[in-house]
Length: 210
View 1 (tube, rainbow, N blue to C red):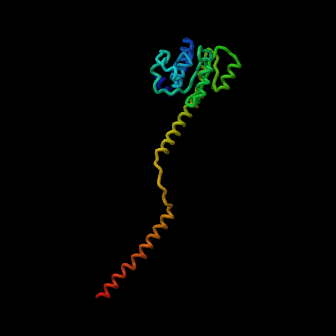
View 2: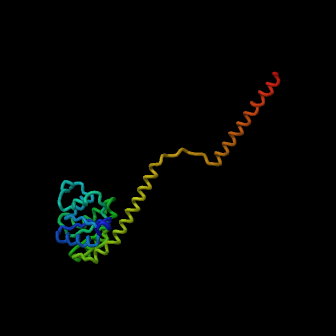
View 3: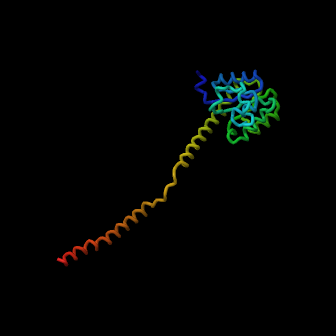
């Protein structure tokens, strides 16, 4: 399957409209992205593991069950106008989270309102698409996905490096090579000076005795 090759790019699509969810899901899968769809901002936060207060509702069928476990989300695309939590509210929640803020967020809206677009971009949205979303819009997602992948890879390398450093036990202080050689020479000199009289004395005392 072509999907398996690009499955490392996983997009979470959020829209309360079933028709729009199906449309964006089809466009993303055509571009070989792995897609999970949810119908509200709160369920998106559940999927991301951020909304602990609403975990009771996590068995809702709107979350694709086969994608829920151990899946890294590389990009979130959300509708702006949704009941309850809007796309703008979801964007703010994500950007306020230390663990999620680096995930690119794209806002979709059927209304071309410049102030709304500016507000979302200022809050940290990476793109703002007007509905209906087209294939040309989806093509704009790739640079954001690549950036996220690189950031995650770098983070993982840094984490592994820090863990390696932490595991190493503290080493006892060791003498410098020159200092160690100097100490060895002193020790040998002391041994020579101390042993030579002891070795000669028994010979003379022995001869005298005889």
